[in-house]
Structures are given as structure tokens and as C-alpha cells.
Figure (cartoon, rainbow, N blue to C red):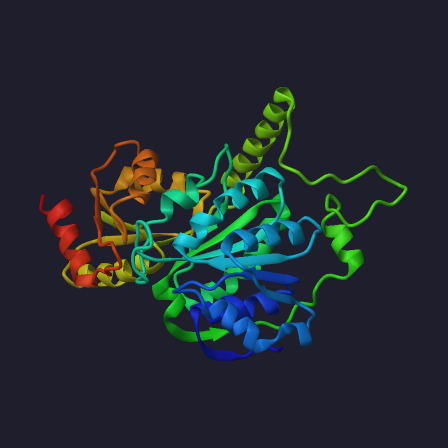
Length: 361
């Protein structure tokens, strides 16, 4: 597998990136609109070339627990699903976070609630960054806005996962997962050797040499004082990530009077809306969020001091806007514009909302 420019779907890009990044295993269950991840992996048959295991589990519950087992041995293990399937995996997520097990998860969001529709949405924001499972935990959550980023962020996700011993969530939606764009692939990174795995995951269950005690991978602790100390350790880790791992893109924000705040598909639409506004003489910028946790609090607060207003563009009833308002500390008017249930707004709709709700209000 060598570097080349190829036309592919976002879901296909994730699958190809998993192989190219040296993943040891993928355990999943098909669900629209992300089924091409597993389909591509099955078609590529990486077990014949790299030794990567690809297995369709009997359910989402089974797949996330297979991830737990494989990742607990220090292997690079991943899964993917869509909104209802991700809901089923939430217990596994909190176990993974509680056991400090690194892994990569992709969610191609669809409209809800419930089974909803197979069309794209962004209504899993709360579930993703507020902790869908129980306990005080976080997932590192990164939101691609293109097929190229779907590919590249898999590599980034492994780095973060093992650096912080944390599950990493690539939060996308059916629009990016299904759209086809040019994507530059990378040269294959070999899977870790046993020696490399032991060096990169000294905490994992890979056998006990005489030189150390047992490695125990668990999220269970019955002594309250020790559980509190562990939770304090997790919170310190999350604060470190907030200081060092925040990612965003500020576009035309230096002179902006008005700012769109968006991520993923919505940020692509807001980009065009910004361009249309600039053509009309409106000084509009775009803050594209790349990490949703850690959230770019400092950048939002900085822009709130200069802007006359912000419009949060989401394909939801309004979820991300809560974090934007908290970060801005009420220093500027902040409004929401969104379509949901699988509906996608147009750039003209988004610009009209900015003019009506912020500029001409």
C-alpha cells in the first residue's frame, strides 16, 4: 500500500486508513449510513496482507466488548457504527474510559431520536461530548469535514488514543461518510511487533515477566477513596488535553464582525454562506471546530470579544450552542440555526439566518 490519490467515499477512507495506519483489528456491525467501512475492509482482505483481523460481530454490544478485549492487550483496535448503534455501545465506552484503554471509534451520525432516519444529522453532540455512558469520563472527539480528514484523522486518533490511554471518537455524519472526494492516501505503517507493542503499551495484558507485577486492566474499584483518586487522575488528564490538544480552524475571523460557529458538514455549508456574505460586503468569519472535546473555549471567548454576533450552525435542534454560550460568557449575542431529522440546510438558508437573527435584528 503506497501513497496515491484516489476517489473514494468517506466511509471507505476510514477503512483504508485503518489498514494503512497499522491497525490490528476491527470489530463492527453493519448499520446505515456507515456500512461501507466494514464492506471495504472485507473487500480489501487485510488479514491476507497485513494480518489485520476484521470481524462482523453479532451485535453492537458484542463488537464494543471485542474492542475492549483486543485493546486491553495493547493492540490497535477499532470499531464504527451510526447513532442507534453507538447508543448501544455506551456501556462499553464508559468501561473503556474507566479502564484507560486506547481505541478508535467512528460514528456516522443519522437523524433521530430513536431509529429515526438514515439521512445525516448532528444530533449526537450531547451523547459524544457530555458522556453518553455513566460516570465522569470523556471521549476525545474529533470532527472531520472532508473525505481527506476522514482518512487523516484515523492516524491522528491512534496517536491521541495511546498518548493519553483514552478512547477516541471520530464524529462524522452520513453526508461526509457517503460523499465521494479525492483523497491522498499514505504509505502503509507496519503493525507493531510484539516488542513495539510492549514498549508502547507497558500497562497492557501481554503476559507477566518475572521483572514486574501483574498488569490488571479493569474499571472496577470497590474502595471509594481509591476510586476518587482515580477520577481525579482522569480529570487531570482531561485538563491536560484541554491545554494541549485543542484543534480548530479560524477562517476570515481577523476582521469579522459576525461569525459562524460550526463543525463537520455544517462547517462546509457555513463556509459557502460566509463567502456569499462577503460578496455582499458583510464581514463574516467562520470558526470551524475540529475537536469537540476538548472544546476550543479560549478561541470562542477571544472571538466573542471582537464580534457583534455569532450564529451556531448545526444539523440539530441546538446542542453545540450550549458550549459556545458558556465559552463566550454572554459577551455577544449568540443564536442557533439548524435543520434536523435528516434535513440539510443550504448556504443561502444559513446566510439568511445570520442576517435575520443577528445582523438585522
